[in-house]
Length: 155
Image (cartoon, rainbow, N blue to C red; front, side, top):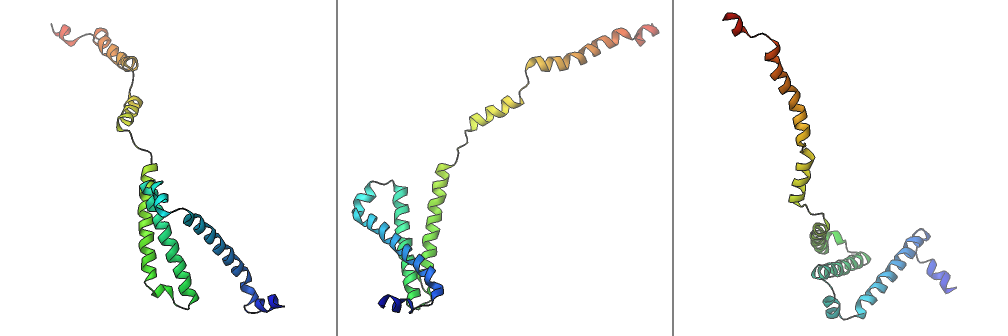
């Protein structure tokens, strides 16, 4: 009967949301236990500097998000609290780290190779150039021979 009494404390419409929230809190607790199992100094020594920054930003964002939720449970509007600016500052830093990560992953342009590709794509072998120019030269060479020259008539 005690279980029935706790179900009546809140509307049944939010039962699904509360169940989801409970499972999310359990997942956060599990992740925090994993992070807390190893001393922070040892954990940071095993990571690259960029990964250290990601870990620090993730930790700060999680703690501030949890504080945001705490403020809501206490009836405080977090949008009017300083926590909003702090979360925005952390998001800005996360975007900077993401840009750095994306730059590392981006393909790099080898200017020398690109120039060779363009040069070879526009390159025409000498045989083709000669075969295109040869008929016009032949016409120019044969044209004066076929026509009588005006100078010979006047002489």
